[in-house]
Image 1 (cartoon, rainbow, N blue to C red):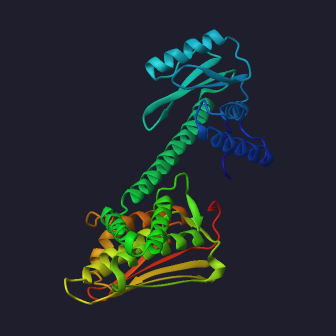
Image 2 (image 1 turned 135 degrees about the horizontal axis):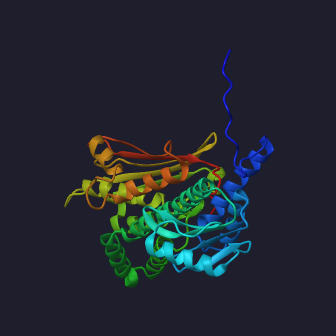
Length: 360
């Protein structure tokens, strides 16, 4: 017969029933979400209220490195609380005298703020709530870093627009000013449209229609530069034109096809030409876009290295696009590159037609 064991008494903040447990989890999740703006953000007061509720404390305050506190509830002594916060900011260790305790909030091993609890609360419970707050702040910091990295990658893509192409396009436009002013005017408008789209700010997502318009403009300028040596075929199904996709995804793929696929085929005095084909269509719930050229192609191992970000200077575009697609849609998505030396290159983009949060 089993020997009965003595149960330890539950702390006051421990949930008494399943309903209470669900309430605790909701409060914890809500507090974590409210801390995404930091300990002094617009939702910090709401976070303090939820954390105070988890502990059943008389008051709970949050401070950044300035020492200014946002309270939920009223502490017995604001002067004692301010002293405890100042001590934590100086020593980065716990401070205060019961029933008041001030805990340092560390994010990536750096002091990010202070959590102050006033009330008859077990220290172990305060430590748990402190850990919850630190985890929420750390996640917010990581998300912010990821967003800044994505913005930097987008700026890098904009900066990678080939100066050689821009110079050649302007040269062609200038040469037509006298002989064909109407054509020169059309190309100048295309050039302005292309630059405006490539340098647009504050855009995370756009539509398939806008991306295809941008590559049509780019290819029109390239045809003006390369003449009959470049042939273009563009086909896009009407039902995918309104699908939202990350901004500036297709243009780097098309520019790669022209610069690294078609142009290397041209030699002085030759009459060789190349074809770039761009297609967009729906396959079930997916959007599939392919960019194909019949150019020089490459070793598949080289293509793999480029997608891994280990390619030569000037090949950053493909790796950048692939990484952005995987960040938005998950590891199952991204670019697929089919190529071989002398056999051209085909790059395929497959993404969901409907993705939460992806809105132009």
